[in-house]
Image 1 (cartoon, rainbow, N blue to C red):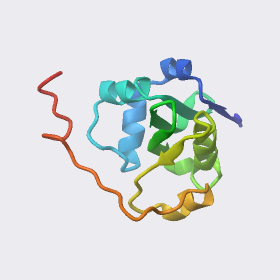
Image 2 (tube, rainbow, N blue to C red):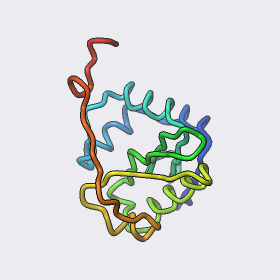
Image 3 (cartoon, one colour):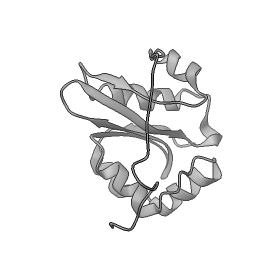
Image 4 (cartoon, one colour):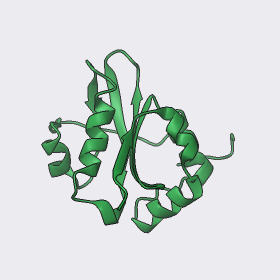
Length: 141
């Protein structure tokens, strides 16, 4: 059985089959409407990424949006449903956070507070967001 290999090297993004990744996300009900190309761009344009592989299969990923000084935002944390509750997602997040020492790392979660609390995150009183215009507005692309 192949071991799990972790990386935070952005060059590893080139090895991802983005169509397969998009299909895996959809199968895990983690699809937010991005096309394979949009998912790839989201990760390529991130400040930092963290990936986990089982053989040649991408099984976990996350990315950070950051200013490189003091603030970062953790997004797109996903672990394939067949590999959950094995510490993989936690390791992906820990390795990703290690790329931004001294940063305040924020996130939104709808129902995984316990997972993030185990990683040292704590609730903040107010979190707000808005979509500017139409979600995934492709008219400007």
